Image 1 (cartoon, rainbow, N blue to C red):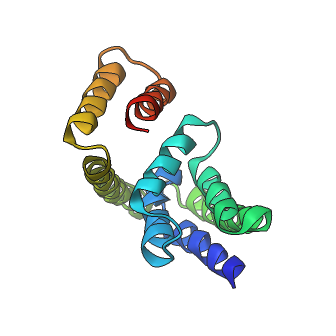
Image 2 (spheres, rainbow, N blue to C red):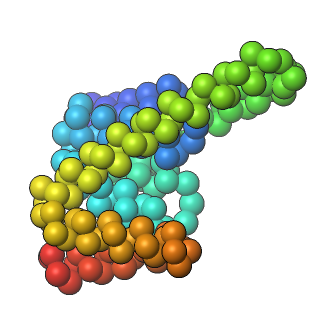
Length: 176
């Protein structure tokens, strides 16, 4: 039964989500944290931060980690397959259809409407992580990490992986 739940937890977000890994993270969080309770919001945020620091697509890393955490190697395989196979099949079908109608005004409008939806979903995810950080680490540490991260990313154009790594080290040394 756990394999079926893992399959559904990653299959559904990948079928209904549009826009790639970052766009479906809130949907995966709704399944993993909200529906099945395999992790709490803080654990999910930490898993996402670690997944962002590593190379390769975020959704497959999240699926592999959560699947392994819940049901071992078999769970990791089921979760990764539920993430990759349906997306690949849908992408091949949609790509052929979109390519055939690439000059259609409807297709162009559809793409323009998807971007704001993804932006709102990412803003909600950011707010939920910020709220979880306030509860877990406290306002001082959360604001300090957020401020230093923003300055490093915007002012000094530091690669996001280094910013995440620095925040992990800070959290491990001072908050752990």
